[in-house]
Image 1 (cartoon, rainbow, N blue to C red):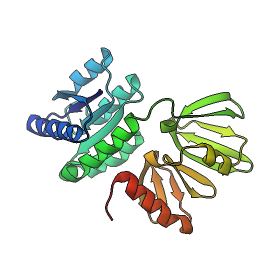
Image 2: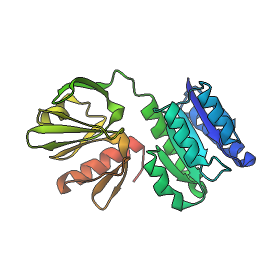
Image 3: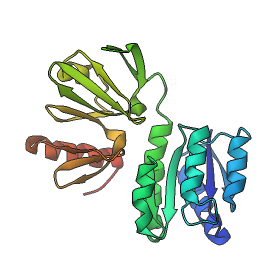
Image 4: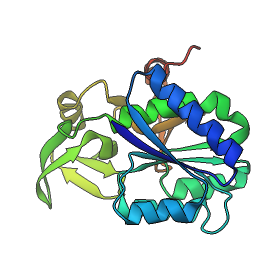
Length: 240
């Protein structure tokens, strides 16, 4: 069972969000417990007391501590917890992405964006830990890295460099093509001869670039662009 928390100081809106979240998980036939908090301090107390959440949905504009501070506190205790921000003010988006949140949803677009956001979050949460890539790194010995931690991999000279969500980079002395063959094709896209990107961490395509969760923008080769667009649409369940 997944464990979720929703926090918003607007109680009617909080109730509405919780109902929508529960409806989405019923639709997906996934058991999920959803706890509602109208006070961010109470959520922080629960987390510090040992409560564990797979996903936290937060309003940004709340009485102190606001959503940004609350998200930071949650991540300090539960690093793997996914955060979805709801807000009425787009100027907070940059700060939200700096916190490596999973998704940012304007409240005015919640009806359209909440469902795909929760579906994408579920895909991440349900990746089993045994889906990992094991390799001998150049400077750190034998490593086992869960797929969900890998944002992208690039080649330089004869090495392949693994860029993780934690911003740590590991190097392996192996051609990128070989690494791609060893990874699951369902989770990773070869968007250029020099880059492999985890499809979980592609936030959008923009002007021929894949924009990743950590802010990295990677150029997609022209021949690969239609293929990448098609794979992303199928993965996101989009109809275009």
